[in-house]
Amino acid sequence: MNMNQVSMKYSKLSEKWYLFREKTASAFRALFAWRHSWIFLAINLLFVTVLFAGAWQIFSNFKEEIFVLHYNIDFGVDWVGDKSLIFWPAGLGGGMLIIDFLVLLFVSKRQDYKFLSWFLWSGLTICEMFLLASLLSAYLFNFH
Image (cartoon, rainbow, N blue to C red; front, side, top):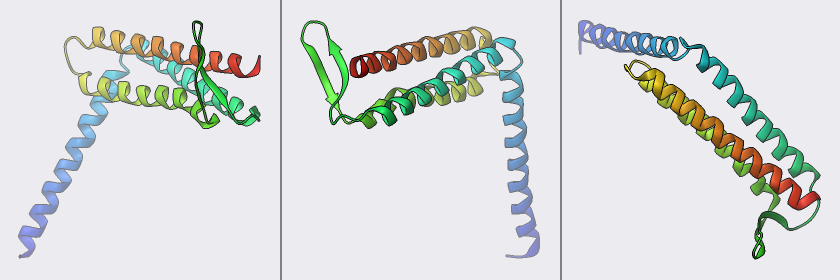
């Protein structure tokens, strides 16, 4: 392999890296061109932070061996486990936020981006509200 071939491979790799950076920056600009994207991102980051903080608070203050995770009105307690399972709603909320953000980056150049963005952000916000409700109910089952 001579020097010309090495420099050509390097220049092609450099070109691909430059194109990747340009396309990524363009997708981020398109994603945050709408004000509601900033607002929804802030709200959902707040929800995920509250989920992790609440899960940590429950985890650090719970001293019993059995942690009640679900209570059914008809049958009573139907799901118990280790107290570390309280981090599942927080992890699920964080994972959904990352996946939603990546999907929005991929569809940010489409014509129907505004509709898709409202649909995905609002769906994520509703899901995280339900995750917060599940964390609150687990807190109420175990501490009150």
